[in-house]
Amino acid sequence: MKAAVATEQGLTLREIAQPKPKPNEVLVKVRAAALNRADLATARGIPHGSHGGIGAAVGLEWAGEVVATGDEVEGYAPGERVMCSGSGGYAEYAVSDWGRVNPMPDGMSFEQAASLPVALITLHNALLTAGRLRRGERVMIQGASSGVGLMGLQIAKLMGAELVIGSSTNDARRARLKEFGANLAVDTRDPAWADAVLAATAGNGVDLVVDMLSGPVVVQTMKATAIRGRIVNVGRLAGMKAELDFDLHALRRIDYIGVTFRTRTLEEVREISRRMRADLWDAVTAGKLALPIDRRFPLDDAVAAQAHMRENKHFGKIVLTI
Image 1 (spheres, rainbow, N blue to C red):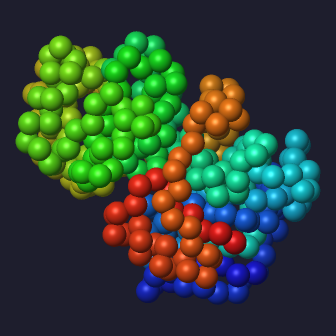
Image 2: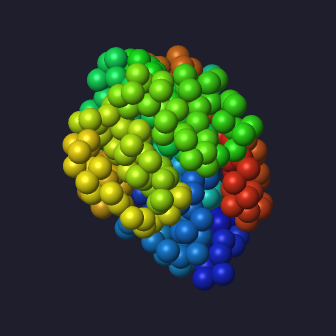
């Protein structure tokens, strides 16, 4: 089968063996796969947790039709349209654990379905499980113009957040955040952005931050967080390391929570998916949680698709059609 695989020089198209489903897996004929920033690293052979490595197909989410299932799998049959997360989605066929497979709602395109799995499980877990979001709280999504960020804005609003704030350093993308539920959009390049958040919250700060930036922004993020607030660190787009004001952290009594799928067990990921479906699947089926497709590329142009992602000019998801 054709697949976009990792090499030491980056992504390349090759013919590789079609995967065979293990007893717990579903084999899918891939029709569309969505890009994520982690794919830029795995394309160079850098493992993403237990996934990836030189010669492995890249891609964390896809949609298509079930071809076959392992003996332990129940509820899915050949021909069913599904959306999945896992590894190896930039390919004509991919396998996923049954707990990471979801049925596609009627009328949803493969491209739209492929854009959803990672954003849904990542932001539901960050907001509801790790972040302990309660109805009526104030939420900030740092890096909100990414696919997962836009989903975070929507989930926060759906689950009853009173005030939702998003950040983006791109003027055009920041102007669109209100379309996805943001009451206020801030630019973290502005030295006074934390003051704007405090002003919008009567000086209190937000109760919960989903932080996809970290780096040198982290101290300002703590300034914008309420006493006894929570910061859930999902990504580090602004940098892996920075000075931390431990006194400010203590004064505001902030819970700083790190999350990643790279060190989670299969059972933990299944539970994350189960909780997401319990809370969100009616909204997904009704079309209330959706992401814009920025651009579509054929699988043969996967290298160009990743180059487009590196330019950081996209809004929403970049999708491969297969």
